[in-house]
Image (cartoon, rainbow, N blue to C red; front, top):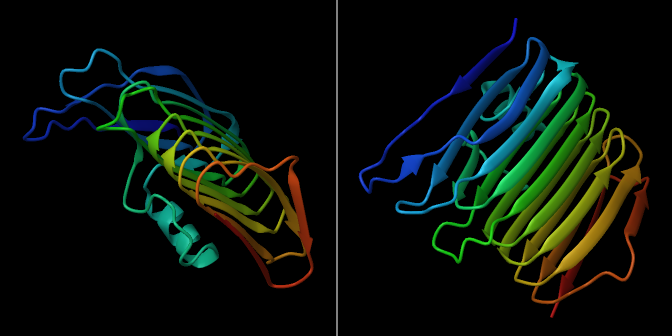
Length: 226
């Protein structure tokens, strides 16, 4: 069975919900819970493309399985808990593709109160993994690839940040960027259960090449600050 739930809400400030979705495809037993809210008086909406056509029992948005899985695997790592897949503001765009069985995704992009250039997110989950992108600010870009039974999360707060994270099977990988103008690419791999966290606190910190982190230990934490 395939079902799609889209819930529209209008708040006291007359903010209105705009669903501007591309084609939505699904296999068996998939679910999608989406909310897109355009700024009151705005002329541009948000765009979301979903592809679950090669997936089964996959879920996008705030359903119980996402929250339970994230709590179990991630712990205190930030992700959009308590939200459907949500885009607030204008000109935000996201693409979420899930293949295989039991993939889970969460999304939150919010550029309300900014110049509305728009944030961009590209999420690919291959298998029974969990992927989360949270971007607050404007002109941020996130690319997340989760392979197998692994967890990947990107959290960016600020403007004009770029994050590219690829997570191998069995690993938890996280990029957190607090600031503006940062650009980081991380490939996280290692033994099953390893947790790799890459944190940037500051502005205009750029990686010259993708950072490959391979570990056999339980956790690795890397922090850049300026």
